[in-house]
Image (cartoon, rainbow, N blue to C red; front, top):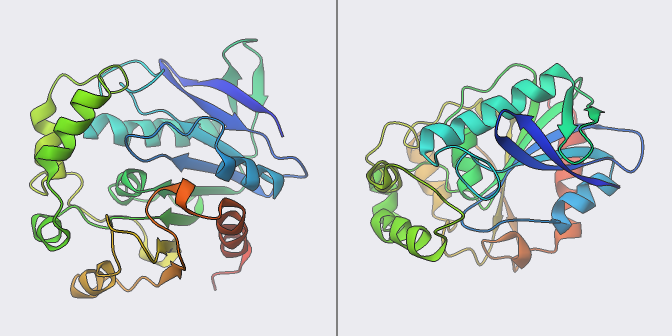
Length: 253
């Protein structure tokens, strides 16, 4: 397994984990906020199981250029998928082309990363999607149910991570995270291809989400992971990687 810092497109950068053995496919993995998952144990475990993993950094965050906005977070995902479909990306240090398996493409995300995935109309080339610690729908009613204060959250990332998140319009972020926006409140992903993994101790997106999803008529099975919280470092990352691998390799028909 080798980790590359890669140029995905323009000033969009990320980390790329190469599969240790014959590739089972390529995963685009969308991270949460505000954590920066450098040298992720979870991605390392997936690479040991035979996956290439592209972990992009949202436009306007960490090492990627541009402006951090919800729209650009969606653009981060779509641009990453375009590069995967093209079959190559570039190592930024050597400028060498890295050839990618574009036949079997999977999509995964944790927390906020899952919201970006849900805001996307899933391309047909995506075989399966997995969401960890998902907050399935950022709607005003749901934010009230779990006691999530979007304004306070945006204030937190703005004050605590001033060089990690560079936005020109913090009000847009407040609106979206408060469930009053036009992007995160939509659920457009193909439900039939989604697997959700939820920590039993997750206080940010608790088990009440199942009730809310049923209310929205979104029949998605939620797999409870005993003892886990919200962040990946609260999971047994080898175990969750193996669980995700089993799901990705199971025939969905």
